[in-house]
Length: 237
Image (cartoon, rainbow, N blue to C red):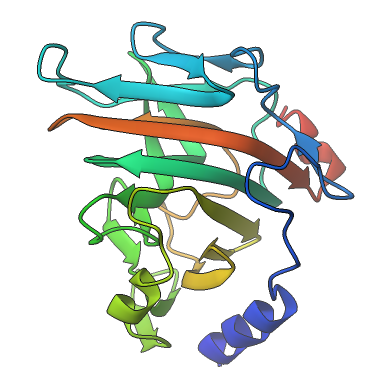
C-alpha cells in the first residue's frame, strides 16, 4: 500500500520543464540560495570552498589531498518540507547534498544525502550516515517505524545512469515532503523513499554541500534554488 502511495506521489511530482543548463532564471515559488559571485549565506572551511566561474567549488589534488569530509552549510534556514533544484558537475571522487541533517563540529554533518559519485555506484541514491543506502538508484523503498523495509525496483540502475553526464553538468532535484523523499537527476526519478523509522527518520535540518575525502576530485554546484512549502520552515526555528 505504501509503495503504491509512493508511486502516486512520483506521478504528482512529474518533472516540470527546466530552463537551459546554466540559466539564472528562478521558477515561480522558488528562491535563489546562491548569488553566483561569493559564499554569502553559506559557511564552511574556506581552505576548501570557494566560487569559481559562477559555481560553488571544492577541489582536492595530489598536492592538496582531502583526508576527511568537510561540508559547506547553508545558513538561511533548516527546512523540513521543500523542493530544492541545482546543477552539479563532478570530476572524480564523490560528493552529495545533505538535507534534513544534523550539524556536528568541524564542518561535518549526519543525515540524509542526495548522493553523487564518479564511479556511478551511488549517484542518485538516498544515503544516510547511520544506515548507509536508504534507497539505491532504481529503488522505491518504504521503511516502517520498526525499521522493516519494503523494496520495489522500478527501474534498472544501469539504465538510469545512462541519463547522467559523467563529467558534465547535470540537474539535481530533491523533493522532501513529510516522510516521502524523491531524488531526480536530469528529470529522471532516481530513487524514492518513505521513511518512518524511529530514531532515524528526520523531518527538518541543515542543507550542506559535501567535499569527500579520497582521490583527487573537483565538485561544482550552481543555480541552487529552493521552495519551502511550510512557512514555518523558512527559518527552522
